[in-house]
Length: 291
Image 1: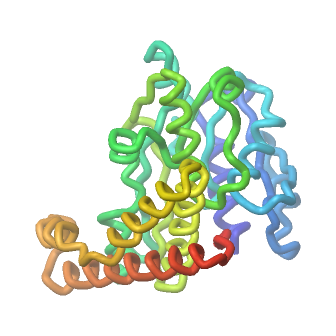
Image 2: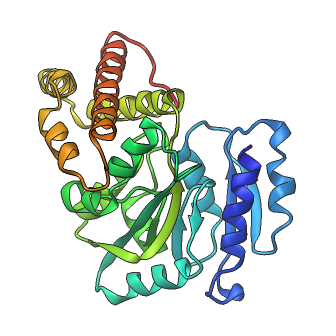
């Protein structure tokens, strides 16, 4: 259940090295099953308070949290993540150490249900999931499972685009960069994130990511021809066999044998073709999925 993971997250946030009188935790319930009893769970923790956001989507939920936050530093994580004990302390320090800092993207470590018996999907996640440093260096954003920023930055660049179901962190991070703020990656600002472990979970995430990518392209490209050109480029990229990825996988030291390397390569083919099909579906008028 979500509440079990939320308890782990809130326990970690309750036991931070940062002084308790200097931070608050806001949990935004974004349409959970009433049986999860999110508010009752949050009430068990002194540092935390709960609220609701009826508009579906994590970016609408994050905006609700921003609107209620009292501090000058705003940090984001997910309900299923486990922040390190010094997460807040290190995040604030990283923000302050760089002049004109717009965001800090912290390290995201992936953990597994049973580290001794990884599924094919977990093997893929161990190699590819949430490469935060790469996100920052290549695309100028940080995944909001682990991001710190200043309130004044949000006030200047704006909040997240609540219309996006995925890739809202990409769009917001690139906005921060466009305003001239510095962005840094920090190994010491660390959270742990659970790996997807099954194909149904991966399928849902792939649909969401494909939809977010499609919606973001539509938003950025006002010109009809440009939109279609970018769509075709994206579609062809998905449909082309991921040969360079396969070469990289077969060289990765995390994968111990040929069976593991082949499993991860097949998972990548699965993701590519599911993504391509979803983008085609959206191009012909379907609505992007939240999950």
